[in-house]
Length: 158
Image 1 (cartoon, rainbow, N blue to C red):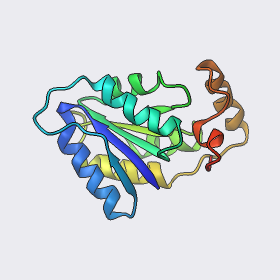
Image 2 (tube, helix red, strand yellow):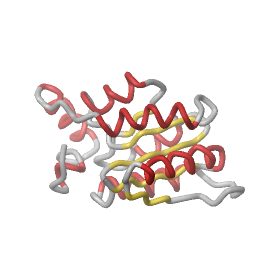
Image 3 (cartoon, rainbow, N blue to C red):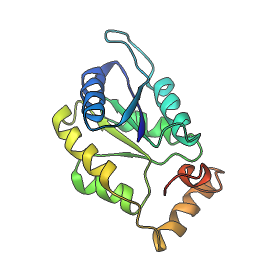
Image 4 (tube, rainbow, N blue to C red):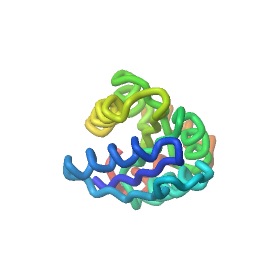
């Protein structure tokens, strides 16, 4: 799967760790930056990853910052994106299984890169359950003006 990944300056180490983990597990990785040591505004990097996911250029997105919260808030402004801040394996699983999240957000000040790696593995391995949850996801997508989830619109898997 092609995965777009970015961070802000507070989480470059985590982003680089997760990008390597993804490549080592056979994923194509679009590393959207930033360069180490560069002070940046996280909404710019969240938007880049979110747009790639919404356009179907990436199957999933990964965003890292100090808390994961700012990245998720910015990414969720892009129609068709459902970004979740993940602090546990359960949240990783449920964000996919029930909410069809397509962007995982992690906080380097909240967890180690190795812990985020564990959560990301669950996030990527979990399929969307559909059923009653599909109707609810479609309602969420109606709130942002996207008719249906990005993967469905792009003809990809749900």
